[in-house]
Length: 100
Image 1: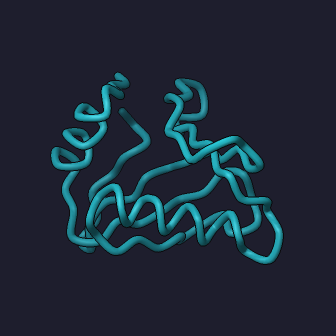
Image 2: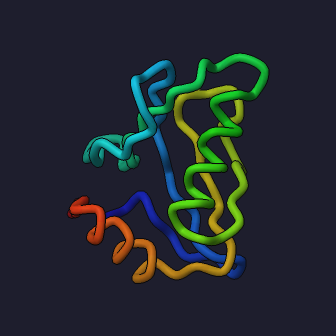
Image 3: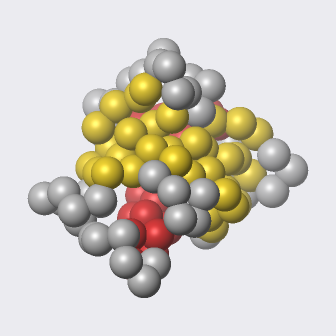
C-alpha cells in the first residue's frame, strides 16, 4: 500500500476523510489517489474532524499521532510516531482490512 511511508519519526499515512458519517471507520484504499479512506463522525468545523482523526488513530495504534499536512483539506497526511509499516499493516489486517 503506497499510502504508508517510513520516516525517522515513525510512519506517515496519506488519508482521505469523509466527515459527518455515522461512525469512525476505515473503509478502503483509493488506488488512484493512493490514500486510505476514512469516515469520521465529526463535522469539519473548528478542527473537530482533525481532533477525532488524531484521537481515533492514536487509540487504534497505541502511538501518538499528528496531522502534518492537509489541516483544511479532505486529503491529509498523518504521522504516527514510533511505529513501523509492518506493525501498522498488522493492525489493519487484524481489523480485516487488507489493501494492496
